[in-house]
Length: 459
Image 1 (cartoon, rainbow, N blue to C red):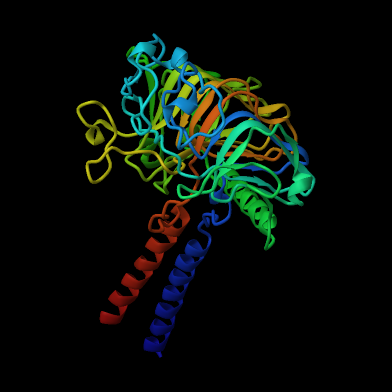
Image 2: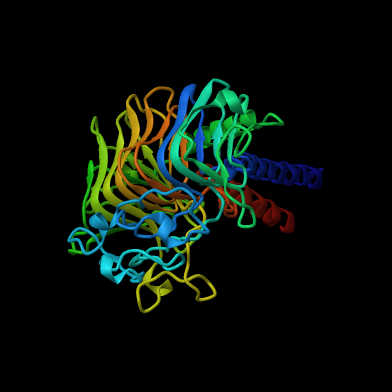
């Protein structure tokens, strides 16, 4: 009889233990998919005018850092069809006190070293490089059946082109006759029009895109902050370096929090319940908590440093704007992954070009412009506006790099832009499940019960 009671107790203990472990496993947050959203450089979900481009190239960024002194035609006629000047950014980033970009392409020596050869890009020390040759990633998704597109002086290097949730002829409301579309390296340029480069979605694709965005909104808002930026204006490092380097691996992996403010107010003290310690889940969750102010990165080069596996998500906690002015925000690497010219290298020792999204700035609360950009370079950094109100993304002056622009309203590029797509093509693998503290306590208790039962049985 005693033996049966002991067996029953052991069974109950093991059952409680397994139940706890299974419950913990099932409660783990599931990372949303990117099957549909990853195909697009620009996703605009608003009604009325959802996307407006006033010059540039999408799916190509043929001169880094770009100079408006060189017509893009002159770089490589086989790449560019329409005659317009390049994006003017050299006056901001090259040989300037506030910036640390290195001139690599010197083929236009009479033009101050700017211009040139497609495939040789200027670079920011400690950052991943931006590729220049077209990759045909400049796809645009207009998911609202009432959404429209206005475009002029723009070239779309895009395997899918502009896709709309309405007939192509209805979707395109503004064409100046000087826009082109090229689907692949093996195809020729075509004039962009309703029958060329603009098409209507099939297979309920807009619904799938919107569902993925909704899933990501829920996922992002469910995560605990691991770091806070409380300074409304990003500044240089206190050591005098022109760059502000933020180690996102450290944020994701840190088990003690950050009890000392850095130069930009980075702070995390779990004891004060304002954020959580890093949990090594592949995401560094950074809240931008600047009270009732706009947040701005201006006159700075900002590097988000990682060994390659961590993705950073910056969440705006208020309804104000995120502004980038005369600034670059780039994915980067530690010194151990750099060559003797401070360029990032991949695992094979080759130059490491950014191709995927390593970070995003996210807001779903904006009531005015969610993002404003003036003279900006982004490298592997996306801008996601999933606000219910507001005005969307507004680019006033030159903008280039590798990014993904998402807005529930309008994506407006009022000036020259040169953009490749970087998307969340591959979400990080979640780590092995780590039981929560309550589970650990229960786990220990169950082991203690089993040990005591075994001792009684042996005695």
